[in-house]
Length: 146
Image (cartoon, rainbow, N blue to C red; front, side, top):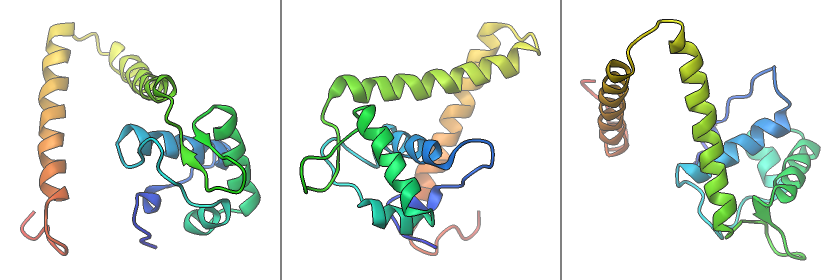
């Protein structure tokens, strides 16, 4: 199901509670700029339908995000992404730190000199961004010849 807005990208695993995976997806969308400060997010029912999850799970995800001050809900108004820059910076630092920790754990076993590792990471990162930007700007139905 293609719903747009990044919701179709969610793939749940069986290891972690679904509500925490939903919270992580919100964090990833914020860090990627797909959700911005103050942006209205889907209602709990809408999110449940978009992600094909139980509405109670969506509610639990929202409760968790409210407790972490990731989203703000005032009265009967729709929930929104927080404007708190400290919270937004912390989310970015958290996700980046987790990714780097996993990477370091994986490559530490190989015993590669740091300079070589940094050069390789830099070249792979740049190449991936080039490929990503060329596929992002491809016309609908594009990608022919790739």
